[in-house]
Image (cartoon, rainbow, N blue to C red; front, side, top):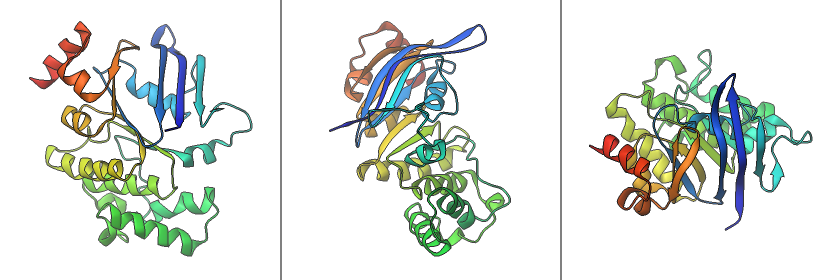
Length: 244
């Protein structure tokens, strides 16, 4: 498997607060990598650096071998290839479900209205939201909004999809409907980097689990290694607290 994203020695501070202190990891094609750790450990900031929502201070992130900050990289084209799903959905409230899924296709990928519509309907059906295509996005439940947000990201035909705590804003009964969509995507071989507090999901779906603590990678490995046989005392403490 080829490496699709390589993170090298990434540092990021907000004022005096050093949030990332030299992060290194790589993601291969078709891998699902879950970032776990307590709030404030730097997971979401790391994801935002990969999506170019934050500019890191030092280090390098390579996508398909090319520096993502290279001036020849068009940011919108890059974000089409490396899509992001946010915890707060970030749908356009003034647009219907179908329009939410069409607009970037037309603007960034230069698709015709017909092509964009066809792609949008295909992915809305995939996430179980086809019947809501003409609904106003404001009328949807949280779980429905998140499924639309995933469909919208998939419409761009991304090579990698980043998920920033995609279920943390949802009511417990809606969490499973979103996780089951993500499980299906994993089975289909979509490369994903997921910041999550859903340990069972990470254990079942990830190829690699990275435990972050206070801005560093404390430990990384396969789900069975991290959950059954963690080497680090910090990892053990975190899992004991969260799995109790």
